[in-house]
Length: 372
Image (cartoon, rainbow, N blue to C red; front, side):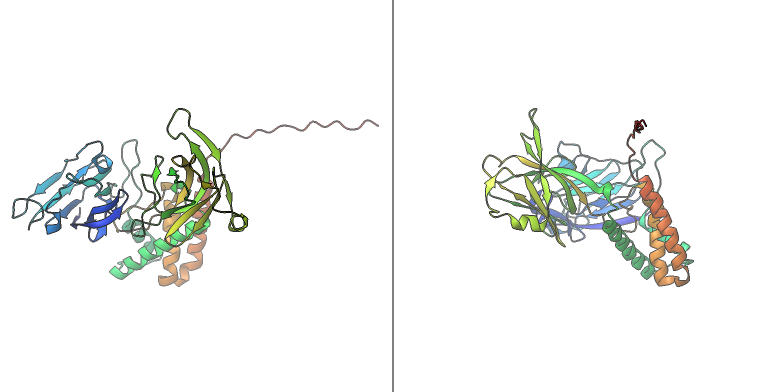
């Protein structure tokens, strides 16, 4: 198994918990990590910015409630006897069936993020199926279908790029409804527009609560439905559906700043964010209540080669076939048409299976012929 080293530093930034001092991993602010089972990960905390911070793992987000995780974890003090000095590091050997982890600071809240622990491309022998194939395995299989053996570093790089393009093409087809989630958007008096950024690097999203998201929601591709929610999380909670309108309808509203109880919403989708604009603008009685939304997120890019694809297992065959078709356009032109047909065939089967059947009832029509 592999040994991977991450450089850990501390600087001001914005993550799902807000703005302030955050962990930076290889220069990225509080990224979600994939710690593959069986691998060894070294978190180098020798940089002086770590001097007043202690890097640790937990099985609870932000270690709340407190649930420190120490299995397979070794803490090595630096030359100065503490973190932030030469040689300081935290090493974790990820065990089989390790739980999803969260890295955090034991001294300061809100500095970290999630560390997923996928299996190395294998399926659990227990009742839980934990992952799909790793990205490097998908790439290798796709190249084999193209008749390409002994792939180079550049071929790996271009294949990962093609896989990300394939995921975006699926988004254009609407094939990402396993990414549907929900949350509650906190209403503010006089604020009609609520923003959900692509990532923390683009800005801080509007405040949300509950559902499948945390206090901030990122990566929304679209908002499917919305309801006005009174008395959130109380026994007398009640919902009133909002109507989704298009740009022309919203433009025709004569007074867009009029305050009242929201009854309609308009969604705009930009490169780096998605916005929801309410009509009417929330008034003082609506402030403090919520808009409950069902949303669909982007398919996450492939990322590191030992990541697993952000797709359900039923789409693995068409993912490999689709990547092989894309790669054939670069490396095996004589196989393009054949691989395209195989890809579309695999995709149609996955789409046919990707649903939940409902009960159907057939009622015979009673017919009385006119008597002569």
